[in-house]
Length: 173
Length: 236
Image 1 (spheres, each protein chain N blue to C red):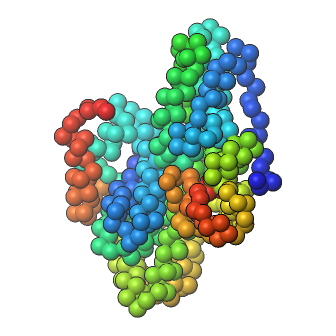
Image 2: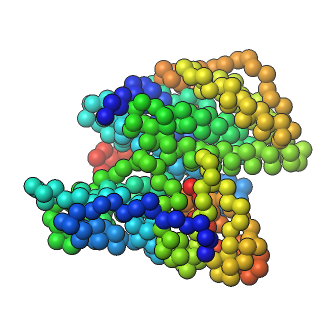
Image 3: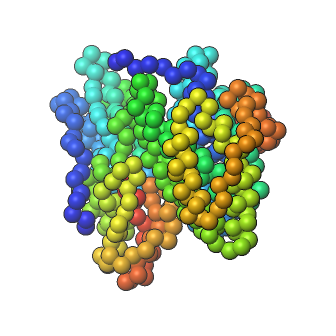
């Protein structure tokens, strides 16, 4: 594991009425990286319950502007919160502040690595320069980038020179 | 909240640049020189499309005519598009695709960087995300420009040809903004390192921002819009 992981700044102050709704939304896993939840990825921003109408508003943020997983996440969040007993659920999208891989929690990073996806390093400047990526399988720093783009917008393809296994790396973003 | 609203034509210029660039990039899928590049160009197209959707959704609200991102993308005719000519031009070989991506992503990075501090909060939020993606696209285009320009005799010839052919169309990017000096310092450094000759300034075609396009846009739109127009209102 990389030692610099900080995790999300803090979980927003969720009201007691919204707590079960938050827990339900937080349990939704990313449809393209099913090892981690949207809370661990830092995509879940806020959950509020209107005291008068009982309407739940869940606020999420996209990772990349064109991430096709967002529509699926929106549907799954709404379903999870409804299943938790709330009838009226709205899923809103918030762009600011822009999502960054620095918002991925420590447990999220551990789960990514356990799933064979090297977690991102810290973001520097407008785009993160990854200086060294450790192989999620054997831990060796002797790795090389095979392709700057991978199976999803957020990943790149790497290979370990020590154990020769290819692996995916979540790009610092 | 004291957020301002950006004029419709400016929003369309930003959104249409991204949309038409996405369509051209997507045309490379399965035709790029290597499989990793298919994936790369499809991913860059997806980033462009993501920005286009966000900006055109906003533009549709500003327009207030009851439309949405889809009506703007699929139901406008060529004269109603506000994209620069550069993005609509065909890409007869891979060098053209990379020269265009170099010119466009250097511009988009600067434009989004400026828009990220815009008084229009909604546009600023979109731009703050997009700038990170453009920086990555620029890295990618730079890498290929170096590889092709400073590569074999044939790759150098093709890259120089693409740079020469597309250079006149870059002037239009800077209509109404002051970004050209910063853009030149990025692009000239890449061209020099790639052993390519920076073309001299001269002919500077324009018209895209007022809807006067090359004939290439019509063909591109025909392909992009045909399914939507053939099945209006269809849903999955």
